[in-house]
Length: 121
Image (cartoon, rainbow, N blue to C red; front, side, top):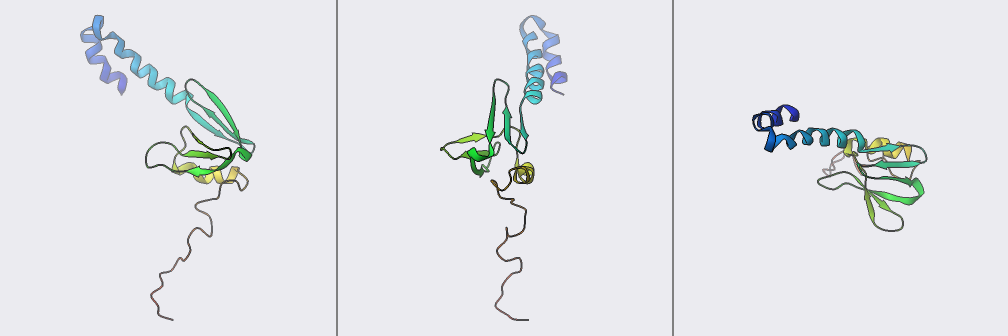
């Protein structure tokens, strides 16, 4: 879709706007390269220009910001963004972590499933 959008101005004035064809190429490279691979050993974080691995023992927990990717809080302090990890992959992270990251959807996440109105039944 982005290629179609940049085609009209780029083809109408290619000498000046021909560089617009680089935008869809950059987006494809970003989508294909940016990922987080979850395994029993830890996480492999890959961005367009870098690669980093984290062992489960290095991770204290996760933080979910309002915007952006989930972030891993490190035992030594600081945090690392987990590329392409959103709220929907938290259960996968919890299952692979072997208990380092609690399952937010598992049992015991709610203190009381039924509302307490003070009446006995």
